[in-house]
Amino acid sequence: MPTTRPTTPHATTHARLTGPLALLVGADEQVPLVTGDTARYANLDIAASAPALQSVADRVAEFLPYYSSVHRGAGYASAVSTAAYETARRTIGAFVGARSGDVVQVVRNTTDAFNLLATAVPGDVVHLDVEHHANLLPWQGLGERARAVTADETVTETLAVVEAELARTPAALLAVTGASNVTGEILPLADLVEIAHRHGARIAVDGAQLVPHHRVHLELLGIDYLAFSGHKLYAPYGAGVLVGRRDWLDAAPPYLAGGGAVREVTLDGTSWADAPARHEAGTPNVVGAVALAAACEAIAALPDGELVLHEEGLRDRLLAGLEAIEGVRTLHLWRGAVQAIGVVTFTVEGYTAELVAQYLSAEHGVGVRDGRFCAHPLLERLNDGRTAVRASLGLGSSAEDVDRLVAGVARLVAHGPQWTYDVDGRPTPDPRPLPAWVTETGTGSACS
Image (tube, rainbow, N blue to C red; front, side, top):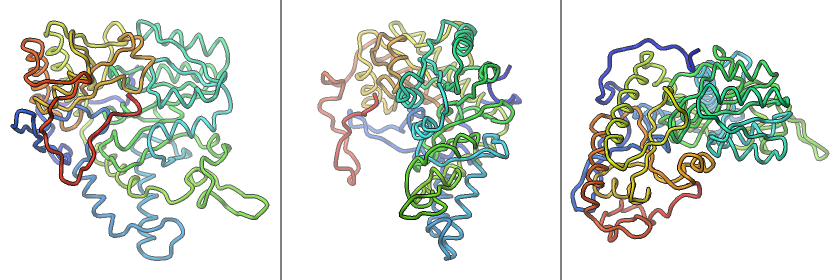
């Protein structure tokens, strides 16, 4: 059964996608190298945070003159802002095939969405051990109500252990990733939906990585809840969504207590509104919602299958190039042919992941990510807990970007780095100037 909505093949090349959709803010940005040269930035860190589509930035600029309070203001700008916010909610829901009764809950990001859902689940939650922390840590907060299942060596065997766990002890919710943020591999959601529903559980999908690459349709697939983030979907303006069935969200305690989430307040108590207002206390991120809706519109305008074929070609090119280099190992979850998005994680024998990533940036102008990718249990399985390097593809990616990364890794293996690097992998000295308006250098992430 298909994982996502069926697509129709279209001819494509491994060059950048053409047309307005391929226009990304900063796509032709020149970045300094430690050698004193510059290079067009090859952004292969899309899985962490994608740049804004130019059409999204344009929509935000168009909206900003009307920005005002929503739902309660009498002014014209307030009326426009309210209409824009609620229109965005409908647009986002339509993009993912929401049912007529579903709630489109505007949140900050996927992590926020699952923390909200964790307050609403009326029973046990079953999840896999391959999850991003966004779809792992909120369930751990439920204590004994959360049950982790260890993914097996093949997708088929993994489905079997999930079914066995749901059959062993009833659960209210099965929470799974749509696509691994470490390996890009995709689980068959239609099969998981069938398994969950057969055992009386609902299913929540972490769509942070899947939604930007494959169309997902809640109603056709039977998914109960879907969470994803604007900053993964070319709309990095601070909004994400939880889309799904209303009853649990209406029954849950308000995610935040405050104005906008209420029907009536007295000194003795409060009558709370239904979702989505129930969980959107305070002034919402209207700009973020407008941006996310604009991204949904732009991606929905692509011919079916065009983006998938574009990324599959580039991923195959990247895998072939890396696996031809002696000492390079790519990480995979499951044996056999598995559908995947444009994410490839690898290690280079003799070099730390931190040095490889810094070297690619400093000497080749290629942006990748190193670490454990907020998926520590999975990296424990795949790489004995050690860090790795992740390259990730998206709308603006090209064969030139892929080839530059592969050539850089090949040069590192054959000749070593041209520059010097400290024990943390950072170039020393680092002569690359920062923009004048930046005053602090980066010091790493709380979620490696």
